[in-house]
Amino acid sequence: MELEHVIGLEVHVELLTKTKAYCSCKNEFGALPNTNCCPVCMGFPGTLPALNREAVSHAIRAGLAFGCKINRISRQDRKNYFYPDLPKGYQITQYDIPLCSGGAVEIQTDGQTRRIGLSRIHIEEDAGKLIHDGAGGTLLDFNRSGVPLIEIVTEPDLRSAEEAGIFLETLRQILIYLGVTDGKMQEGSIRCDVNVSVREQGSRDYGVRCEMKNVNTFRGAQRAIEYEIKRQEALIRSGGEVEPETRRWDDEAGRSFVMRTKENAADYRYFPEANVMPIVVEDKWIEEIRAQISELPREKKQRYTSDWGLCEYEAGLLVSSKPFAEYFEQTVSMGAEPKEASEWCLGALSKLLNAHKLPYDAIPVPPANLAKLIALIHQGVISESAAKKVLGQMFESGEEPEGLIVRMGLGQINEEKVLSQWVSEVIGENSKAVLDYRSGKKSAMGYLMGQVMKKSGGRANPSKASQILREALAQV
Image (cartoon, rainbow, N blue to C red):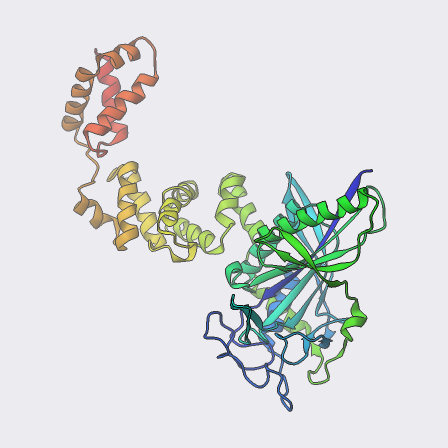
């Protein structure tokens, strides 16, 4: 029996707002436990929530980017359940009238474009955080309680763990470009619940769905899906039945555990949140938000390939990070050719970033200085190999390239007399390579040229030195 996998995701995204969803407490990561909380986000009796307009704006921006319908009137609801990290005993969310509905995310897989449908995007508040102290106790930190989220719910359109991983990476990249979230996985800015079912190939009916909670990394999501597919397939092939369950994923153990039988809407006793007015979205507000959406990764990549002649691979690497793409574009705007700027950004600059373990938004070399360095190579002031040494020093000190070239003694040597002397010495010291070249082995030219550059300490003008070497070899 051929089996097919059906996967849907519920992605929880922490929004980049200054304050929480319903109060004026700071929305920041890393503060001392229980210092960013107040009677409102702790749910004290008599307190009233006030919805954060910026959170709604971020949700609308995401909805527009993914082609969702923005519902002009939506409302907030209470999702009732009892857990230690939920001080109110309920979560303010949206149930039957979400802010955004429909839409899709396009992903690239196996050279094909796939549209993964979205069911909805709604706003809600986050719960607090449980911290297990390792001694059998559990601590509570309510700093995260009330942090604004959007939940992005997909249609069951994904068919493999690999597709799910590509979807999550694509989604994260777009949301960061939108300025909706910082996307920091290590801080829990994006988390997801995974829904998996298995059915007979070609069947229109869905299989029994199981949901996995506590998936905090994209790699963890892929592993969780792979595990759940194998678990359900083994049950079906052995004649057993898959039970609808909510399971907890343990990434360290590489397996999931049953938490409870699968809930449905009735278990949460949803009802309208009476303390928060309905959300009314005017057309003017939508158009203002639409005007704020800048070029997204897919369009930027297309422009790099069609207008600037970069290959798909190069363009994809550059747009993978918004700060990196902005740095590259600023370098081009300062006069560097796009192809050369791409080679330097993806080559020498990226190596330095990796060596210093720096993110793309912390490049210590201003784009103007990188453009200057590239221009100095064109002007014959410095060779490309020497320029890489200068870039390394620019990375350390932040100095401009002209002064460093002088101080480091790396200016390119163009004097014909000096170059001819080096060429003469190389020919005299490498008779076998000269004979190889004369007998038609063109690769010998590369070796001899390398010896010239070695003698010059990398400072010989490669173009002039190569010309002098060819002329000298013709006379041997």
